[in-house]
Amino acid sequence: MYEIYCVEDDDNIKELIVYTLGVTGFKARGLHDGKALSEALDDSENSLPDLILLDIMLPGEDGISILRRLKEDMRCKAIPIIMLTAKGAEYDKVQALDLGADDYVTKPFGMMELVSRIKAVLRRASSYSKDDTVRFGRLEISEKKRSVLADGEPVVLTNKEFELLNRLMRNPEIVLTREQLLDAIWGHDFSGESRTLDVHIATLRQKLGAAGEVVETIRGVGYRLREK
Image (cartoon, rainbow, N blue to C red):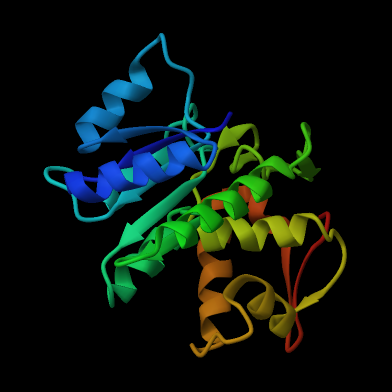
C-alpha cells in the first residue's frame, strides 16, 4: 500500500484529503507544517513515504523552501512531490517545477482530480527501472534518484536543467534540435523566448564544470553530447 504525507495547515482540507486517500486505497498521514514533516521523515520507526503532498502557503517555512530542502537531501530527493498552490500563483508553480516538483494542483480542487494526479505521478515513478543510470564521459545521471554526478561529485540542478541533461545523455552523439528540446522540456505550448534554452545550457555547463565540455553547440541547429 502506498503511503502519502499531506503537509497542509488548513485542518479541514487536510482531514478531507487524508480521509479521501484512505477510502481510495492509500495510507495517508496529515502533517501541519515543515517541522512536523521533518520529524516524521527523521522518525527511525517510519519508512519514507511514497509521495508527499506539499502546500506552498505554510506557517513558518513555506512549501517552496521545504521542496528545495527535500531535493537537496540525498535520502529524500527521489520522493515524488505534488505541490498544492493558490489559484493564479503562476510564479510559485514555475518555481516549484524548476526545483523538482513532479506536479501541482491548484486550489480549490476536486478530491477525485487529486487522486487521479497522485496515481499518475506514482505510475511515472514506478516505471523507472531498478538501474536506470546512464554514463557519458565524466557524467552520470539517474532518473529514479534524480541525481547527477560530475567527476564523481554530486551536482544540484533545477528540474529543467536535469531534464535537459537527461534528454541529451539518453541520446548520445545525436544532435537534438532547439525545437525538439523546447517541445520535450518546455512543452508544445511554450510561449517564451528560444533564448531560454541557451541560458539553461550555459548554466548547465557552468554547474557541470570541466565535465560539461561534452555538451556541444551545433550552431544554428541545436545541441548534442560528444566525447572530447
